[in-house]
Structure formats: C-alpha cells, structure tokens
Image (cartoon, rainbow, N blue to C red; front, top):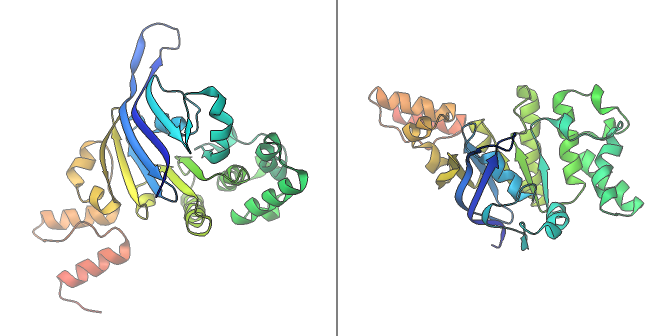
Length: 285
C-alpha cells in the first residue's frame, strides 16, 4: 500500500519569541511512514513533539532539515502548500479556533469556496459532510450557540468538505465531555470504515487508540516506539515511564499479574478483558 505521508530525518526547532536563544528541538530526526487508508495514533507527553509533527503533515510548518512528503508533494516547497492541504485536513482540539462563519453551513462551505469549487458542488459537499457528522439539522444555526461537541463536529465537517485523502486530528476530544468524546470517536471510525479516509489521531486518551492499525509513541522529539496497540500497551512500565497511561483493561491485567496471576496484557477492550479473566478462573461461556 502506498504511503500518503512520509518523513525522513525530520528536524524542527522553535526560536524564542523575543528572537533570543533557540529553544530545545521539538523534532529530532523523525522517520515516519503512514500508508493510505491507515488509522494511526501518535502518543506522547506534553512537549513530546506530537503536535509539531502533525503540523508538518499539513504543511503548516516547514522542516529545519530532513524531508516531509505528502501525497507525493515536497512539503518544504511553499508552492505545494495548497495541494497538500487539499489532501490533508486538520482538526484541532479547540473548535472555536477553526470556526470562521456565523452560520454552520457557511462555515463548512468556507474551504471548498476558497478552493474554487462550483456552487452546486459546494452545496453537495456541505450537505454530505453535515449529514455524516450528524449536524445537518443544525445547518442554519449559529456556531457559537452550539455545545463543545457539536462545534467539534462542525469543525470535522469543514475538513470533510475539502474531500481530503487524510485527516489529522490533533487532540480533538481534549475539551469534550465523555458524550462529546464518544461522538467524535464514532465519527473518526466511520470516516475510516465508510469513506476509506486515512486518519492520524493525536490523543491523550488511551482508549481512543484501541482500534488503530499502528501507534507511534513520541518522547523528547523522537519516535521511541512503534507497533500495534496490543504491542505498545503490553509494555506497561515503559509506557508509564514516559508519563503516559495505558488503557484501564491493561492496567487491571498488570495489577492482577503483580498479585500473582499470569494474564496476557493484550486484552484492550472490556469484553476481551472479561473473557481473559473468566478463562483464567476456569469459567466458560
């Protein structure tokens, strides 16, 4: 399967705001490849570099050195920025930073209008995107009157209206309550399963990455671990040493093992964990 995003020896450093001393490097020689149709997650503590990496995927930042290739385009060349943003949409943690219009449907139409789409095509895209995120009935509402979860769904619809091949979600549920989180995670899964959209998810919530194809773990600007969710989370002590949590099911299995049990640590869902414990107790369905 072809790669849609690829970085090689990617480095990025932020300068101090006052133009003085250079701050610590945000990215250090990052090599990553994301294939078309994949659902990948990037995990890391605050300041690990994961959001900086995400912004390179959308040509919002340029490498200090190394390369970023998105859908075959060199992201370091400013002339490619529009083409890259046609293909890779971004959704951030605060939807208020993305909403630009006073009416929901006008906000969702903003990007395709700027890309020069025909009015009839814009109408089709807006309606389709709002239906997919469950916000069609709110199309004439004012965004500022919506809940946080509803605003985030509008932001996702705005990204969808560009018809991107990939959407990068940078901690999209960080400001939401459990119901809002569940709604957004459900939409992300639909994008992948029904539309074949490549999804890159940056998150602090470990339970949101259980269904990912691959997980990249970052620390101090570097990729320190790559694997499936099961492979990543079974290394409980390592993950926690980075200041991260593991899913509650894995934590439960780990604590039971410390008490003398001998359970595998790859049961990520509640159903799998219950089945594993039942089997260890000799209980069969």
